[in-house]
Image (cartoon, rainbow, N blue to C red):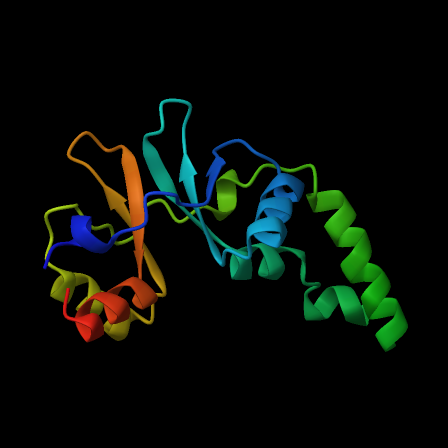
Length: 148
């Protein structure tokens, strides 16, 4: 079985250079935990995870301790940091050399990477570097367990 037979063609994407607020909106609207980052020509640039977005806005321990250290003030620092970062680009958060699959790769290769690296979704990129889809653990499970 090949990746092309099970991959999703409708991957959730965000353009490089988008701001963090836009990326957060896409995550919220789609429920995607990973966004595929592409340029204007749909060339694959990398992956942005919702976890990376959250980690970017979480206040550091020092930031919390610079206040009185109360939960209310920590929340205030968190919200203020989010407002500040909302207009900044995602570019520094993008994982630029993630594992990628090719449409002709075998499903077992994707499954092995997903299990060993604890990855839920992998980008599928053609020989020209264009994003053509994604393959998820659910895609692999469905294909293997349904006997496709």
